[in-house]
Length: 340
Image 1 (cartoon, rainbow, N blue to C red):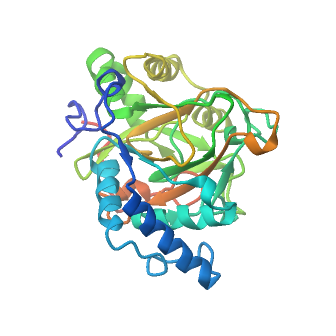
Image 2: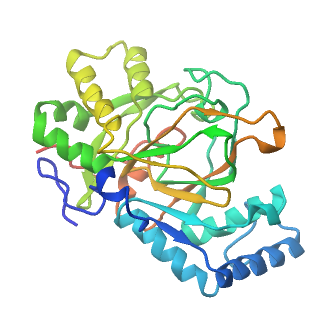
């Protein structure tokens, strides 16, 4: 892989939805033998009484499945940038067991990463009656979400219960978006390379300013790898906090990207089934979610579990040191090529 500014990204990650819609190559269905292996590992952990984050890979051995999970992790890191793992029998386990099972799989996939400044390892993605605006996270609402990337290397979502209607996941290749911008509007790339100060919306460590003390590039390259970090609203709010509102060029650049996310040829929509785990590389994939409507029965309401994951061996490791909202900026000795 040899990506660099000013040249198209030529890699499996530069896909368009139209090419993948009729394929199931991105879905891996667990066999009964593999499910038995997971069950055995879970029962062993249950017997110890341990829970995340104390559980380690040694507590959750997967003698044969671990190789398959490692292959899927490589696909997410260096391939198309996403993967579905299908077939976990969620009806067989209680909520606490599902957390342990999800954690165990995550340990073999990458390294779990805390999702909040308070050290929360899991996020329950379900409706809590919140309004999706600057004061509430979208995962606690039923609203359609803006296309964005999360604040870590990879994100995993485990479906425990799907919605009565709607709630489909929608993803887009950021490399394909970059290639189209390079082809059609290269004049917009400079502001994307330069980046934006981010509004951390209360997620920053105590004592640190709400406005991140660095500019986060939307498009960048490190170690010959393409990287995208995209969340329009925090970028706009960050500029406002800095007293430098978006210019016409800034709006044009984000409008160009937003238009492509609505292009059916570009995006790929998928409906989760209970027992599905979706893995995404945040540096390669923009993701969203359609609006959904829940069942009146609380037991049948949409419920996902979210894990954040970090790959310590990632070739995108340099920019990954930011972890966007909750960690520290890049060290001065890290050289990230942002433009020609």
